[in-house]
Image (cartoon, rainbow, N blue to C red; front, side):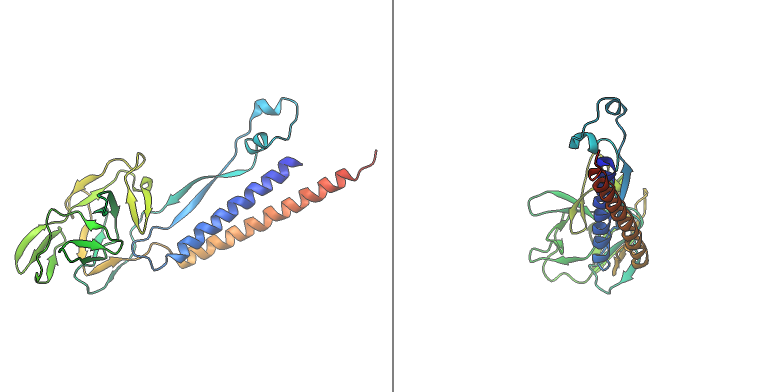
Length: 252
């Protein structure tokens, strides 16, 4: 009976995580270059050796015996729709790759959010306050910038520098750092530097931004599935509780 209660409880806890993840996806429908994610559930393995011993009701035995648990949160790294904005420092990546950013402390971050501006020092900076990793800054009064698909940045016909992109063997393994930024991890592998439009890297599209990868219809389906699973687990928990109550009322 305790196993039935634990199984139902673990299912309810996982449904709560699923609802939370779906709500997070829906909340970021308008977030630039947002990658939606789903939870990956897995059944808890049995411990056959424990099953052969005398029965016990310790929490450790139950947690290791039956039920369901969260294996991972799986991000979907597909490209979102590109939308024209008309701003010269709005950059989208059509294809694979990330911009490399430097935070104020010098840390390295990667992002596909190309909504940039110029700060007082002439550096190209993101909305989060991180700087695009470039070996130069722009002088005050620089004419309107032109950024080609290959990443060449020029002004008034003069080439100022080159924007490079970075690819990962497993982009889904990047560690999220918030605000659409990611950090390298052991799962993602080391970044591979390349020029836009070559070496597997996508092209840079000036005056465009990548839209969120979240889809309203898909997220609503996930909400319905989580709701039905939650109802089933609650019903199972109530049934197990009622059976245990009947068992305790038996008089020998």
